[in-house]
Every structure is written in structure tokens, then in C-alpha cells.
Image 1 (cartoon, rainbow, N blue to C red):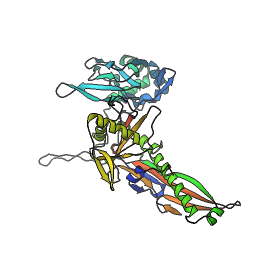
Image 2: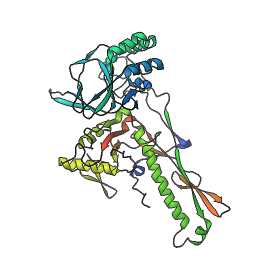
Image 3: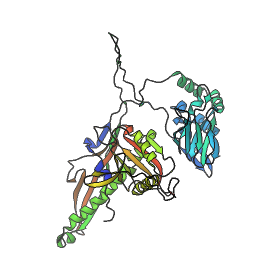
Image 4: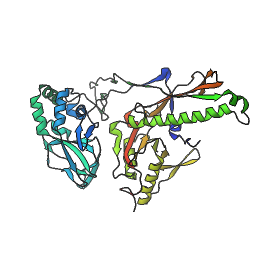
Length: 439
């Protein structure tokens, strides 16, 4: 059966019991600060921001007047830029918000000793300048330059101020936003736990408690099922030299496990590609996956990273980039098998990570384990007619055509316990001859 793969992801995830078919993730209360991504719709070459998506801007977070949001969306102006064009220059007046509909931008600031420093990239759905819509106007603290052809939507702070003056509800919302600095949070955005340290004498210690998310997420087990049908004549007469029903079951289960791994990666509800926090997603610097990109991923999952997971073609593209730089990463031994690694973190292949029509893919980096507050797989054992952990085979009877039927079911899901347990490198170019490939 050619479709059987190594299924490293199923082997890497620690599997946790989900009693009752659900698994609740209780997290400390976090306060969203509007650092998500904006979504657009296109009509031919015209691009328009979805009005509700303006809530990703901090000043509009929680504002729900659809008519006003629709009016604001209509005030945005579409602009096109080519590679190398400057959209905002350090030191010039900061007077607008810029939404990136398509393309890639680089933010360049000043380093500790005056040299230019790369502050990161912005890609589809990103934005900058949201702070210009409230408070006093200032100057850009960085330069934003286009790396590829770029389509953006811009809104001047002056036009936003006009919209505020015309809408009583929007004016009240902005005034409340400016007046309320928000609850105390730690650097991770979680409700702060007050404490004192370094004091001398009999000081009054602060009181505190751990505030939890009032609506924790519950992951329900998903299911992959099929009905295996075998004619009793086959089972009766052709069971030598091998058990035909057993072999049919074996290959059916292999296919179910392949589907299970595919769902763990791609399912829109619990799949890893869709459950990575928006702040944990970064684009590549130049297109192909470089050592710099993987180092950037390691900076996002720096607490005991377990493994990288990538499509085999993405691993090959990373190997080409390393060879072009004269860098030769060492492999690590995993159960007697040599696996490529970067900075000592194994890089495992997974052919379930999609490759787009433009030969772009993604690379995952995760920390695994319940004790490490990482990524875990979910299943339930002790099922009726259990054949393997989390998988059951139930005999459904024999039809009037003498066909025996077996219901084969696999129950599974995955949970990301805290956001910094999973990071995704997006837009990974894997075709030969990419921007960073050796010539």
C-alpha cells in the first residue's frame, strides 16, 4: 500500500485521555489587544476590507455598529507598490493606518548602535499604524519597505477623526478606549498576579488571585469511520496462507490513521495549522526556508522546543539553503534513525502539510506534552470492541448477500495548551530557483 507514510506526527504527540469525549483547556485570563489579521474581499482588481474585520484594530476592538464600520471600510484607499518602494519612512509624520491586502513588507528600524535593524515582516492580513487613529499624532519609528509587489488599503487619521465626529456611538467608544488603560497584564497578555519582592521590613503585601478564562475551550473528539465489507466466501475459503479479513482490516486501519494525521494538521477546528495563535505565525524573510527563518521560529517556541514538522519538499528546500550558505546541520539519532535537525531540534517530515499551487508550504515548530503545557493528542481508550488505542472494530452482521460488515472507527483530536507551544512559518517557497536559492 503506497499511501502508508511514516506518520511521525502521530508518534510525536503525547496522547492524553479525553474522558467523556471532551477535553477542557483551562487557561489564565488573557486580554486580546487587537493584534490579529484583517480579511479582505476582492472584485476583479478592487480590494475591500470586510467591515467587521476592522475590529482587529485596537481602537475598534469590540465596536459593533455595522453601519459605521461599513462607512469606515468605504473610506479606505487602495494603493499599489512595487518591490523596493517605501510606504512609510522613519521620522516622517505618522498619519494613517495601512492594511496589507497582498504582498510582503519589511519593517526597518535603528539598532542599538545606529545601524539599520530588521524589525520583522508584514504579509497578507497584517497592518501597521493602528496607533495613529487615537491619541496624539507622532512620527514613524521605523521604515516600511515593499519586498514584493504589494496591495494595501490606507485610511488617514484625519478621515477617521471626521468619522468619529459624525457618529455618537463611535465617539463614545473611542473616548472609553482612551480613558480605560485596561486591566493589569503581564508580558504574555495574561491577567497579572500581583506580588512583592526585594522589600525590607514589615511592608503590606499585595493581595492577588489567579484569574481564569470564564469560557475555556473544550475539544471534542473527532471521528474517522468506514464500513469494511468482506464476502464470507473469501473469509471461509481463502484464509490460507494469510487471514484475508485480518489483512483487509490492517490496510483499512492504515488508511484511517493516514486520514487521522491529515486531520490533525488541516482540520479547521482543531488542526495545528489553524490553531496556531496569530502572534505565533511569521512569514519567511525571502521566500525559501533559511536558517534565519528557523531561528525566528525558535524565538517563538523557546521553552523546550520538541520538533519541527515540515513537508519533505520543504525540508529539501531548507537543505538547499543551508548548502548555499555552507552550513551543514547535524542529524540527531531518534530510535536508531538519523533525522535532520536544526540547533539540535529534530526536523520531521509530514506529507500532510499542504503545498499550494504556487509551491508554497508551512513549517511547524512545537513543544509537546501536558506537563510542559505543549501540544497534545487526544483520544479515549477502553472503547467497546477496541482494536487499537482509540480505534474500534465492531461486527455489524452478515447481509442476505453473505457479506460481512465491520464498522471501523478512530476517535481523536489535538489541543494546544498555551499559545507559545506552537509556531508556524508561512509562505515557505519550496520550488527550485527561489529568491534565496544558489545560482
